Length: 445
Length: 118
Image 1: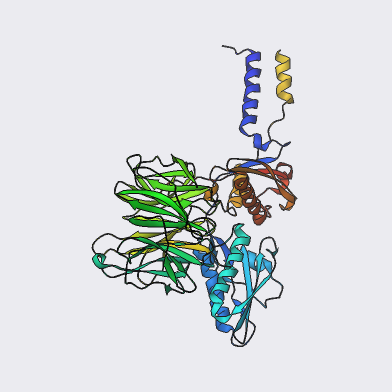
Image 2 (image 1 turned 30 degrees about the vertical axis):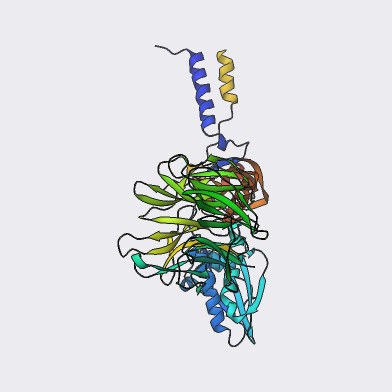
């Protein structure tokens, strides 16, 4: 059978058009169009060839500060320190020209140079960050000054600057965590409040182990901590000043039990659960005036409130539907809307400091998970899975979630872990003994 | 009719075929510099820029369009995309220098990935 010419050319024309449609990105007249949908989480290689000791007596500080800066960055899982054994050029002095070709040759994307000097207990730290492939500085050089006993904080501040300049988001290294330190067997566990740097350094105990303490929560400025104490035999909310370690019970609405406190976004009031006659609702008390208001009024259990960063909304857990789920309502109360609809039970919601996500604990089919979801309940992602993971808290920049993980069995113990919001970089946070209920504070001034 | 169709086929510019290897290599190079924030899942930004003959960005990277998320999300997404483009230049090592016409103008669509549940 002979194919008519008109059919042949029509087919040819169609073929050409289809071919054109399949590769429109490559038409010579338009731009080259490419879609990139797999952003890597491969660590960015950086070189930190040690900080220069500029004065006698600053050698140890220079070495320690360079080490902490590198540990901070590498610990995020977003950066990888290049082995100094592979360096081609010597780092040179702080102000010396950088031989970028030598750093490019070992694929260093960033180069950190620093210098340290000490004079009479005063420490000065300088650093410069270079974008190796761009062949120039990334931001301007910076100098920090303080006392020698604050060397770790200065190292964290340098690392925060480097992190911020490279990623475009603020850092989280110069921050602290308050948590419940645990010791003793499971049936007679001693609990006391403790505070430490985000990486486990500089641990301090804030209370003794005379009574049970639970759920410490940092104020937005990091100067105070709310927690639940059983000192009176019943759970009561206490307020602790971090600097003086002075503490007092908060005068809340009268009730049999008050617990699960959290500061408002401005630090002026506390939202919490109050239990009376077997029913638990949410309340708010102004810390200045002592005035209280009831936020929910339901026969179910409402607890674990957490405010949005702008203070306009509250996320909390409730069993009003028959199972434990997450709800959002206005900060002044009103009709809540349910946001969790997956299988299992949801609890301990915490609003991200960025405002875009809510972290939570999920229990499903005998496993516990830490997860995150959008504030409308969409895009739920489970970041962890274990026998018992609970109580998430956000890093100040909303990049990392810290939580408590308990191991199974009579000798099981609780320890702190952190995980990137992507679910990567799961790692244990060093604490001297057992630890639970972490609350991550803000970046320090 | 036949003649018209024939002339049309002759008149159609044949799409210039780029070697998939170098477009893949180009994509891989930019990807290697892109810190894709999972908190921006479902945000899509298109970054446009010109490259000079050495594979370096000429002028600045511009936001062609953005979809999904809030305006703040889109701004953060574009900033991350721009950093990736600038950080990974020059691109001449992965681009064919004899086909400059194909890559002197570029539009990269960055689709922020959704991390699957673990």
